[in-house]
Image (cartoon, rainbow, N blue to C red; front, side, top):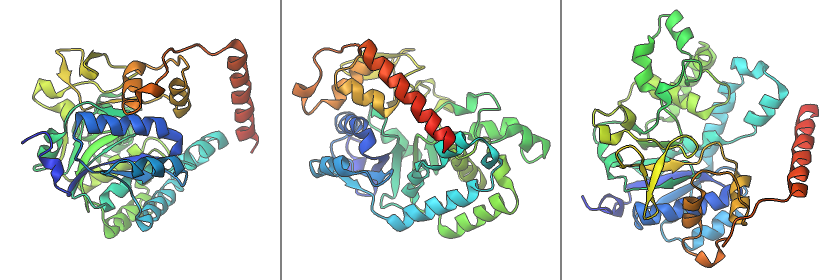
Length: 345
């Protein structure tokens, strides 16, 4: 099928989660889709929160981009996750942890299952798409979920489901659950896989039957998503477990090695094409400073700047400069004050 063959159909699309805070990342992400995936594929932005002034202005200039406006679905997922996490053992952790996690809205990405795309890809906005995604949509002919990550290789204390507890309870063994573990920053799936009655059942199991204790970390959207995909027993495929070695690549900016060929990144090993590069563990503040000309410690920052200013190259910083000692000191003081305020609140 041609590069844009799938995407001329309205039933296919890409979702992301964003607000004005990640505006620079969002612009770069949208530009990378237009250039490397297809200029025709629809993209729908799920609001992380109500800070959307810059996002709304950007959408006006992009013919295939819209903002998700089913607030009933958004509230439904918010309610579901808040009720589940309220009974997780993690609620007894420190106040700093509670303030940090429970004020977030990462769970809103689950609204993809209530959206208007029959088949879709979700990708975090702090990413750059690097190639067409026909292979993902093709896999959805045989599978309900398609992933491309390496979370299944992490040590057992860092994966989404509590393997020691599940094995001790003889619910599942590690060799059987590991291939089904995945992240939530990038995946393909289908609309309607989790309807209201399903969530009512899972909520009962999680809360009343204490299956919430099977989730390793508290208030982590990926951990809850793993529970849902596992309990649903729907077919799952992960490119990193593919028998075809060409499918197995890295995707993280801060840990994997890539080669740049004409502003498209390839896996360093064998120059294999990658779906996307994910700038995980870098803050939105870092990207904002980078776009203002500061020499921020971000891997593959030149590639990010290329896509961020693809449509307005005259605004791209011509030279990156290190912040002054005074600026660094002021930021450190602000960081300490903020931490104290959270601790004392």
